[in-house]
Image (cartoon, rainbow, N blue to C red; front, side):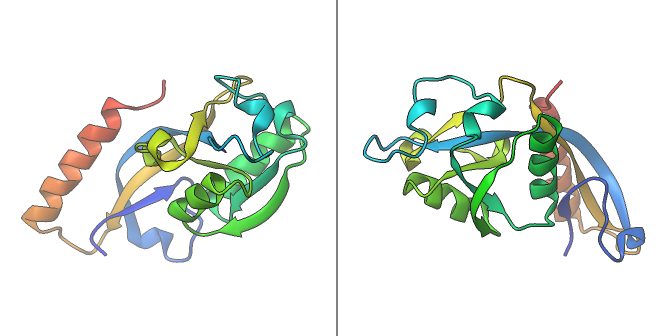
Length: 167
């Protein structure tokens, strides 16, 4: 691979072979279904932001246990004393979005991954208690020189993410 996007700190085998070419703060947001025929997220539909206490009874679609995003979410919930009711674990953002849209549960994703949420059957809520953030890095191999196309793509990506960085 020419470039990667990872949550810091990098804890995977081979991390020493990677160099960080840019890093920024990302916010995780909660997706809730817009379908009023499901009880999932019903109490949240009237809100513009959620509190951790609002999730006590909600089924949660999470990333796989042990994944970086899952650790960030679990740690944030633990910090405020909320036990999440994880009913499904998935590997993909799109899978989480689809399950939320179907009313299986609520789920957390990067605010950069939301796109046109309303048109896809979900609504986005930030955390009212405190933003849920993680440090994201753009990485590449130390022993690999990027092609001019990769260098240009890297520059565009870094500009774009810095423009939307969470303060």
